Image 1 (cartoon, helix red, strand yellow):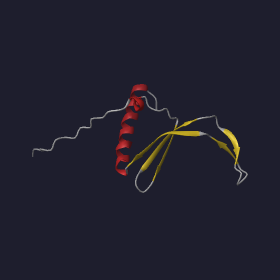
Image 2 (image 1 turned 135 degrees about the vertical axis):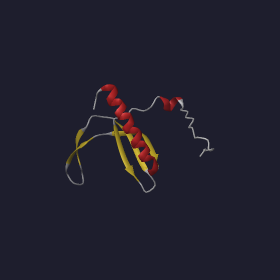
Image 3 (image 1 turned 60 degrees about the horizontal axis):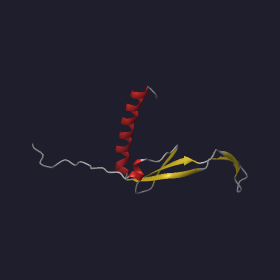
Image 4 (image 1 turned 135 degrees about the horizontal axis):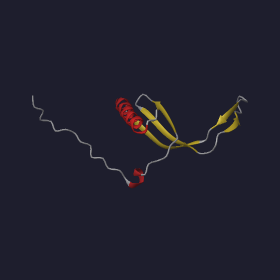
Length: 98
């Protein structure tokens, strides 16, 4: 059977501001009913001991600033996980790091 449907090809472009990227050394993933949210953040100051005024408990405060928030539909989570696995495997082969 011949498929007469043309294939889809994404023609991706990127602005100069986005192309440089953002450094992040922390990520948080959470979800809503509509999709998944990936927050990428950078730690802005060294962690320090703090006191919770409501409970009196000590905790370590790690000040962070979100540099990018990405929202994706649930259907894209599987594709993202596959792509991350492929890239991690390639990275391990290239660098010998695990």
